[in-house]
Image (tube, rainbow, N blue to C red; front, side):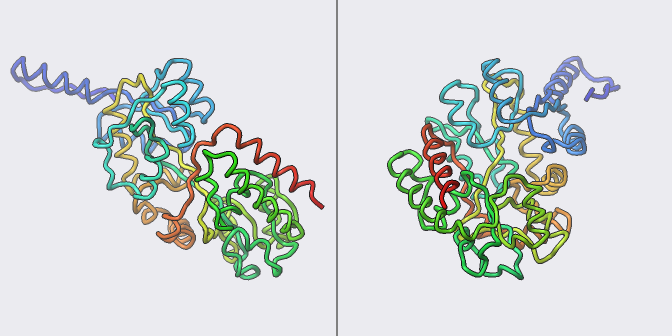
Length: 357
């Protein structure tokens, strides 16, 4: 945004000071983000309020890391990787700079999400990420036909035999582990302990196999199964459940008793970013509840902004509040970075479950 010329006679010193302030206020924020996270209406509001300009580049996790590796952390002033893409790349490549938490308005954030993200993005005592957009996987349930399905292992109940579905992927292993009273994330640093947990989950999933109508592979397939009534309960994502709820009020997303499994896309500062003040201004601006609701409308997912659900559409607000009372939000299990070696353990479990008769 080009500052308006000030047509007034003042001292030369004042002119110089005003010119400097205008130049600083017009710093350009180079934002590397996901589609929907910086909608045009929000960018316009921010530019009008702060005097900063925003250049938006849309990307994904893999491209974000690749771009910063190629430049040693240059080219952008604020980026939005998922929280599990911060600690590892920082330790290996040094592509981020620490966040000055004193410049973040912490009161704007849902406390449990802010605490979890800061913990998962701390390297050598420094915080490198704060939360923005989030989502979960849990249960999508026909509440009339499967009223007793409250947790992942309830998909093995006799009253829903032959009418449940889930994917043979990591979220199923993690979800079942938590529902069995185990803590897989706490065992991430111990391959032997993790293997022991996965062995127990494997036995449970093989025991549960007769209940499974099909292992779904794509979202459209699952939506069709739930709409037709062939499946009455499944592991799935929150936005999918709310989409179904708009068509059939009996079907909705249920946060499992042992905790929904959550991902968070963060705010992080590239190591060679040149507009930190604009970056902090953007973070604090978009976390305002009324602004965050505009991002939810564009992106389809909620943000970590405290109270933003009150500004969402009436339908989405009702769906969110029914699925996520405050205690369910605080019980979300946030995915940490996956250590090397765990994918091989999980792959073996999934293969054996698939092959079991």
